[in-house]
Length: 451
Image (cartoon, rainbow, N blue to C red; front, side, top):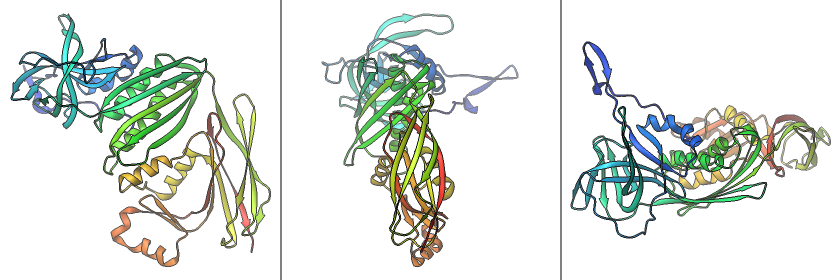
């Protein structure tokens, strides 16, 4: 799903047996997943997702050898390999046994890893640190060694890879800056898999933030994200997380959501070249509520300017006043004009309720443009609208179209699946100045446009 969650895994009916007249399930042994550089809280938080995928999370040491470190020994049947999902300052790898090596081709595990089908994930030597025995289960604590090759396919009977070559990983740089002046930097690489990438970003950011910042208590995290894309403009996003609990989890979710939008949308997947994150942390709540809105007058004429004033108040009672000038279009006919002032999330919900269904991007360019134009949660937005028909075609707005175009958009059955219609037509949009923290609230008022 978009936030990196996974559905529970059910044992298929054909893998159950009847014993003594009672139905008994044979559950496959979980694949050990070695995590290095992660907090115990992060592993516990994501353990249900790991277990649902048939993975057993185990804390380990070392993030693995670099991609260019020396020459590895050729694996043999019975030796262990490590499939690397994350490597660097943090490491996530799954260990398994080699089944067969034949002319540069490698077959391993003898069972599915993630059942992801065609894939491109690096694998390396697995260096066993210690063997842990037990009556219920036994396992080996290990760490990845030198790179060996690339896993090309993950099927029900095992995984298949090729010796040599390098898988394309996505580099991630994370700077965590606290209000007290401490600064932590993380550098790691994440597997370039459209389904795993959002989950792995969620996991790594949650652990990095949670290792130094509080889980309970007032805090505000400013998350800045830059995503470099292949042949497309860069994605630049900023969001604030403020509250009394779960700050690391909400910050990680804010990072994973745009990554999920890029990798799991209906449009062709853009190639991600790198991700850069900067998270500023303050140990206090920075949030303001929209309390009151008014205009300099209620009757206006086309071409005139009206001053809009918004009053915001924080939890300590401090007030912030924001003002902006609204220009009434000269071509606007007489009648009521609705002014809506709200935070970005509230305005998004209003648009979704009016249009009935979201407009899906038709290509990567439109997807990137939509993400970059998404509303931030640290500022107010103002919308001027009239009660007239408007249309949205693949995310591009057509407010108050001419009668001929409105008739075409309303009756052409070949385009109906790509068109959203609303009975409120946008006249103008404004964005107020950003504030330091989260802004929330929704207000509306009506002006009368005179002849």
